Length: 124
Image 1 (spheres, rainbow, N blue to C red):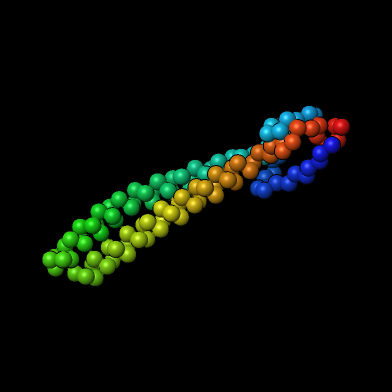
Image 2: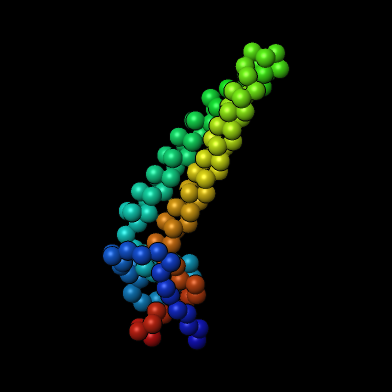
């Protein structure tokens, strides 16, 4: 007989069992209320979309300034500032991607699946 222990990777006030007796490997045994984690995931996706949208004009401006600085149509300082803002916008996109991935992982943790096929503890 194989035994396994279960513990939550995320927290919630509302956890409920979906399986009472026998389970097959991969079946959902318990689930906690995913509402907060879904909201966090959706918020992270929206923040990433905003960061992506902000990146476009920054990239265009830095590209224009790269050409204009060569002919002294903009100062080196203006070009440096545009380049720095572009790097910040790129970092915002990367941070947004990481936040989406973290939120996706936490949302997935709201379900506990059976690692093995067996009767659950207490029902053997």
